[in-house]
Amino acid sequence: GESVGLHLPTLSVQEGDNSIINCAYSNSASDYFIWYKQESGKGPQFIIDIRSNMDKRQGQRVTVLLNKTVKHLSLQIAATQPGDSAVYFCAEVPDDKIIFGKGTRLHILP
Amino acid sequence: DSGVTQTPKHLITATGQRVTLRCSPRSGDLSVYWYQQSLDQGLQFLIHYYNGEERAKGNILERFSAQQFPDLHSELNLSSLELGDSALYFCASSASGDSSYGYTFGSGTRLTVV
Image 1: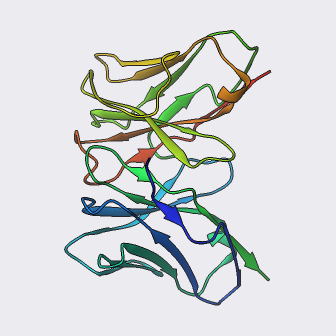
Image 2 (image 1 turned 90 degrees about the horizontal axis):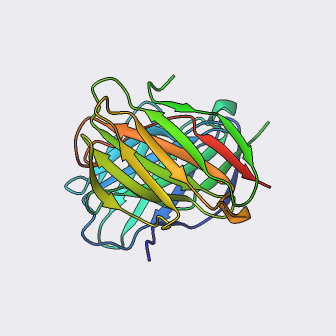
């Protein structure tokens, strides 16, 4: 079956610290990867993406790292804020559809 | 507001019934994707339409069907509903026929089957 997954279902981080959310994927044919953020009661929101010809991409306070050798993807959030509290999904695109993992819930501790 | 509109936001219905969920894609987007999100599952891909034609099918039950109309809005029909069909149903749209630039999601329809 489809098997983009996350290592931890829940992650708690102190406000102001950096957060790292990890993801493993299994399809070697995937050449495009996306991180989505889903806040309560809302649909998933695009955060950042990366193509397989890159190993790092930076956005505003977020960085995605791709290690194709071990099929691992991570999302780093700098200086985590209360507004970052959400479920984060990694997704891979091996063909015509996006395959999502089950998500990691990020809790921000005051 | 993402630009993708889903109606209704909430729906409560009885087992055995049939419902229709509606999605209007972002202006200019030709692709519509439907996903199901249950409590214990991630986002499960159901079906993809591009410019009125079915492009790909995922884990969609035979009791479910969808279509995309000439004005590009899409409807997901769920029939003979079971308790296990209770979930969030999301629609997403993209400009192209593939997933190479990600999707924009609507806010979803929460379906509760009682």
